[in-house]
Length: 124
Length: 124
Length: 124
Length: 124
Image 1 (cartoon, rainbow over the protein chains, first blue to last red):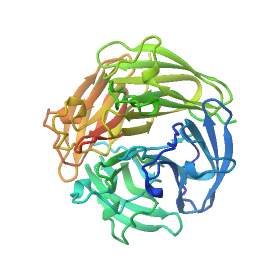
Image 2: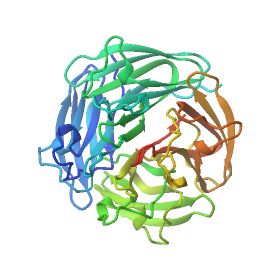
Image 3: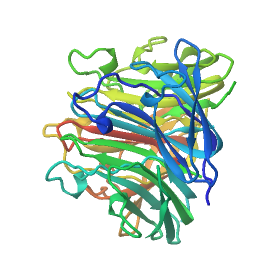
């Protein structure tokens, strides 16, 4: 089994639009995700800290990605310790106890025709 | 001749929409691709494993990229050992016996105006 | 506290459209941003140099990103020593005195339906 | 002066649509670019090789990026030794005699509302 990746990842860009296409189902709802691959044979215990422009960081948000599984973590679905605010610039730091790989994706459906962006996160 | 790249690559983000623009030809069909460059002077024998949220990985899918050639591998055209499911989150691990370079691209034509994303894959 | 990142970053792509969707508010105005995360416990003092196709570089532009904060630096809002020209190809070099992480994003709303791009900057 | 970057870069994804929005000027013409930053104090002499799916590579294409300048190299404007074919998958290898940074961008205006993608190229 293959443990590819790193344990520390950063995503400086973060913004969850409060608006979506009217009637959009979950897949076309405006959202922002950290796509996480744990290709190793041990579960990954992950702590996420959210950084803001003008106040102290919030976290940790905790998730587990089981061995040999992937997770599409939507920042707009995080709620413990508190929801990530909408229409607000934020950044995130993702720390795992085993190597993982993290990719950042946003679907923005504020307009009738949605737009996409994606990039590999920064491996520290 | 130049053997640029690495042998292990990961793409945490994966999602093939089942829908496309009505009447779309192959180029505008919703698809997801691993663009592979083998700039070296030896053929690359590549094994791909697909990871899921809630069940065991599937693979290996095997492809060959000849020396000094490129390949646009569409995940939606893989079928051995089995097709990659649509409308389903997945991730991929790409292992080659010689150095290659891998870039991830998606064209999403669920709506009338398609959207694009692309990023270099993660080199392990 | 975590000081993730590097001190030298480059973004070769730069282009600020002079046009935007009529009536667009700040969030949908055509813009280009360097999203900066300073996850460390010391303020980051940052100097940005802008490079052009056919004349000498301009800078430094100076910004501070406080400890444990993020900043969405819009190139179209820089004005000291001078504004970044519109409809003009440019590149940027971002140098910090402590480790930061930088991601490049553009929202292009020249057309009725905006387009997005994003990538992690290059860490030197 | 700052010589940030590497000398060997690869872009596995390449595709120049033959179609564009009717009446599009140069900025909205479907195009693919390698954005190159030479932040050093010596001119960069660059050789580009284009790789294909089913025939031998073509090149070198030669360009110079002067010291402390940037260049937006459009693959669709290369013509020596021959034009890059349209509607055809290709990849590129970019080799410089001094460090540079390379970012890959495509504007696809086959439809009424254009789409964008961008990623840092792979540094070998």
